[in-house]
Structures are given as structure tokens and as C-alpha cells.
Image (cartoon, rainbow over all chains, first blue to last red):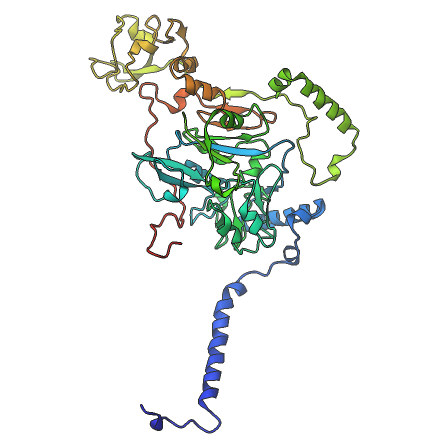
Length: 308
Length: 206
């Protein structure tokens, strides 16, 4: 069709005006569609909206927040949960070690973490990844988690990776809102109610240890772990980052982490690095230990060793 | 900690002095950020418990009337001559025929007591209860026994902090079958849906 055959628009109805009207209509429709998920969400109540940073909460405010979270959980799951806020203990610095001569990659730790920490059931979320590694390297980037054959396989070893609780944590440095920080017992924690979900920390973590809640975790009520911690395994909201917290709701009460208790090979050693009599100190003093990506200077509190 | 105090009496004194000085410091409940577990708490240690192992086993034999009876080892072995060179069950005419033996060059009587088949036998000839099997294993597996005693081998549950609760440790035979102690291969089950699970796609995995 040539230009001279083009239909002359009606007076006052130029092509330009038609296109503008069409664009505005489409734009409004697109905006409506894009905003639909937001409109579906319940508006947060004022208390949640104006809740302050964990570190700024007074004791009374914190009690109110926890009460509200417990009430919400009771409403959502129809059962009682208790959300504790255990503090770092005096003269305690946690460290973890895994004996790679014993670990056979069976993945029971991954599952135990999933159950303990109220992870999303649909995605089998967990803070632990077990990498199948070719023998002869400690470069975790050469590992993969895709194996489904019986373990251990010939020529392979198995490297469970979770948050290394670095003493120089790159994830903490990049957080623009200080929603994640390192506590005095060495655990790097997240205030799920302060996190804005920008995921800078995930990009910064060299161990791929952080997880993002693309949707709110779905846990059947009868599988919910009601023993929860404010900075640990309470059910996270959508759009926030989470990570391994050394099961602080257990370990700060003196108990062993869930992944350690679940390990059928006894490969995991956990404890207080400041106690000279502790098993973890025995590992550091008597075994040749490795850390992952040592060259980055992150100073992990997580060690790996082999039986000599 | 108790051991540390024995070895360093000065530390105990220091702790006591610190405790006395803290006792006069007033209400520490007022500070919400105060760390808990101050040194004036009692430091008695809870026990390291060993998960119990079963005692002498019973063999299930068929009665003439068709029922099944659990009988003690000595029931048959009291009237059978010991076979000092027997290794495993495959060459036997009756009993223990399915018993697979994959434990070095050991014979039955390396570990079982020919004088009382309901007991075990240490290398020096001393008789041992089945419940004390760890002593038997430790004769040859010294490094493992050392690491187990230090809490580095065998797995545990309960408390890492024994000032607050006990710890339960497995024994050798909880994880290792005595006649074929190699740890069995396992089938991994649980897998998160994870970006590491998918094979890397060309040019779009970074």
C-alpha cells in the first residue's frame, strides 16, 4: 500500500491521537497486570510496616514483635510455635569441620536442614549443598550436585557446602541496609524483616551459600518445626534472603546442629573453638585442615579435613 | 572445663575472683544485649553417654513343632568342638551359612571366645562381654578409637556444650557390621531444586 492510497483520518482524529490513546490504554492494562501480584498481597499492618531493625529493638519492642509473629504463625498453621531469640554465649565462637574421608555424599544433612529450618517443601530448599568432586582438587567450582547414583562413586569425593560463617564476610559488607551482620559467636545472621531482597549478598558470597525466597515458603502444618528462632528458622516472608545460621536456636542452647545429628557417617564436628577441650579444637590442632577459597581472605569458620 | 581447671589451678582462682566481683555488679537482666553464659555459672559437665549395644546375640532355630526358638550361642557350641581356622560361614554344613565375612584375615575365634560363645575374646585371651565390643575393635583400629574418644569419629547427638546437657555417641557396631565393617554404599535421596542441579547451558550459566 502506497502513501497516497492511505486512508485519510477523520477530522480531529489524527494517527498521532489514535496511537496515544491506544498506548495509554495498553499501558494502563499492562500496569494493572504487573501490579496484580502486589494487590493480591495483604497489606502489612502498621506494626509490621514500622518495625525497626533487630538491633534497635528494645526488649519490650522485641517481645511485641515476637508475639505478633507467633500470633501470625498460629493463624497461618493452626498450631502453636515458639519463637526464641537466644543470644550469643559468653566465651563462645562456633566453628564447624567436616571429615571428607568419611562423608559419602548421601545428603542426609541436606534433608535434615530442610526439615529443621522450615524450608519450602516444593523446591526442597536447604542451606546445604553436597558437591560431588573429582579427586585431586579442592576447587568447589568443579563440583556438581546432579549425581543420583549410589555413593561414594569411584574417583570422587563429596564436599558439603553451607554458609562458612566467614570472619571477613563479603556478604555483610555489601548489604546496603545492614540487614545481615556477624554476631559475637561468629554466626552471620539476617533480619528477615529488614532485608529488602536486593540479593547483593548472594552475588558477593563466594560459596553460593545464600538462598532467596522467590515465594513464601510453603510448609504443611504438621511438618512445621514449632521450635523457632527469630534470627534462624522462623518461616521467612517472600522476597528475603536467608542462609545457614548454624542452627542457632539449637546451638546457642548448647545442642548440636540438625545436620550433624543427621549425618550417618559421623563426618561432622561442631563446637566452641575457644574451649581447648572441644572436639573442634582437636580437629584444628591435630588434623590438616582446609578452607574453601582461602585466597579470597574471607577467613571461614568452616573447615574440611581428611583422615591422614 | 573441669580438666582445664585441674591443670591450671590459677584459672580456677581467676574465675572465682571474677565471679565474686560480678556478684556485686547488680541486675544484668536490665541489659537486653548482655551475653548469657557468664563464667560464674556452674561448670559441672554432663556425661558423654555411649548409645547402648545389644548383649550376646540369640540364634533363631526351628523347633520340631514348627515354631521358632531364640537360643543362646552356647546351646550348640557347648557340644561342638571349636573350629579355630574357620573364616566366615560359606563352607559350613549348617548354621551361619549366610554369614558374609569381609574383615581382613580374621577367623571366627579371633573375636569370639571359644571358652564361652556368649562372650567375645580380646587378643590377649581375656574374655569380654558383647556390650564392651568397642574395646575389641580398638585393639586394631587405634586411630579410629583415638578419634572416637576425642569426638571426631562415629557421630553423636545431644549437646555440644556439656555444661548444659549430655552427649550421646554411637559405638563401632552401630555403623559398622562386625563381620563386614566396610561402610555400605548409599543411595542419595533428597535433592534441592537448585541451579547447580541443571547441567550448565552454553553461554548462559554465568
